[in-house]
Image 1: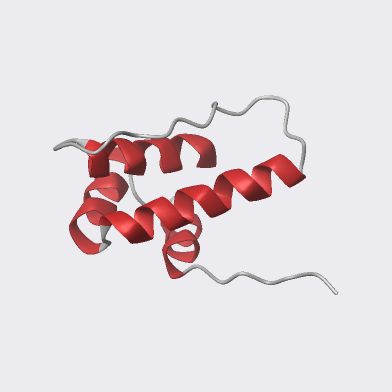
Image 2: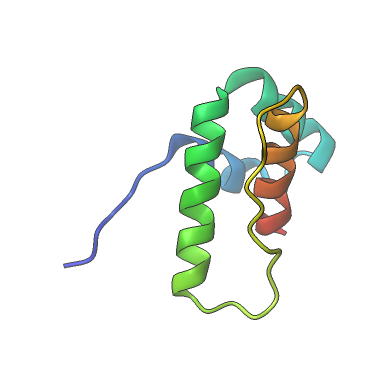
Length: 82
């Protein structure tokens, strides 16, 4: 039986992706979700895309700790959704 992983963050992103501009969606992600939640969602999304063997996807970048890390992780997550 397949494993089901439920991510509130990913559910929100995919449901609101067409309704908001990318900058607005990124702002909501940064303002509402924690760094750990963004990291977990990004890891899950990249793991799932690996299973699908997608040819054209951004490469996975592990972000170093810093002031802009949350913003960069949110951008990585949204870039993979496009």
